[in-house]
Structures are given as structure tokens and as C-alpha cells.
Length: 167
Image (tube, helix red, strand yellow):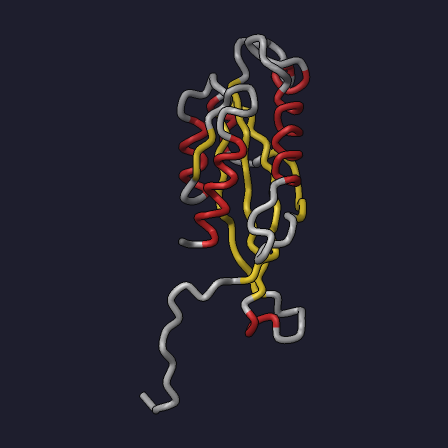
């Protein structure tokens, strides 16, 4: 199985239903994440996804050894409800729920503490927490994103058979 798919499934398992009952979905890309979050805008939702992977070329032999940094994100969102003041959802909550900032901080703590494969993966490094900067405000939705990167040893799932013969 893909190391990326395994990590996304682990993130989904960690978060699904654990933060104010919010379901967690795996997003195929940023556009898919946006579609997940704008669907049923009044409810709290979480989307997790894979951003990119970069070889650790700043280490000697990093690009040959398979050591990489994989970047992941998780976004939590909820509609603003009928609050007259736009920021009330963020600091006071909505519909009897906790404030969105508090929910986002719980999400942040979860991502910072998850442990993937202890043999091939380092403990995640926290990258950032902030506004998702997506056009969700047009739909009356606030969303906050947490980013992490994981140092990992890239597995050789099905290595191609190399030959020294000219092609």
C-alpha cells in the first residue's frame, strides 16, 4: 500500500467524529477539499489531504536514499450560523458548539501528536495554523487549516528493473 494513502487513512481515523462529532474526509486535492467543506455548510467538517513531497536533497545523498519530507494538511470548517457579528462563531461558538478557534486548536494538537510508522517515519513537524484563504467566506463558512510535514523513508513498492544496456 502507498505510504501516502496509509498516512491519510491514519489521519482520517484519528480525526473522524472526534472533534465535536465532525466527520473527516480525505480530499483528493485542494478543489475537492473546498467542495467537501462547502457541502452542508452549517455543520462542522474536517478534510485532510496530501500537498506534496520533496526529496531531502539538503542532506548528503538525500535524493538517492529515498529520504523525503511529505506535506499534509487538515482543514476544519463550520458555518457561521445566524450570528450578526461575523467573528462570533470563532470566539463564542455557534449553535451551542465550541468556538471554531478552539476546535482548530484541538485539530492542531491531534496532528502534532500523531505517530505514523515508527520504523520509517519521524514524528510530524508542525508547519502552520491559519485561515485557509479559500473563497469559502462567500458561502458563510469559516475554515482553518493546519499543516504538518513528515520525514519518511520512501519505500520501494515495485522497483522498476534497471538495466545497464542502452535503450
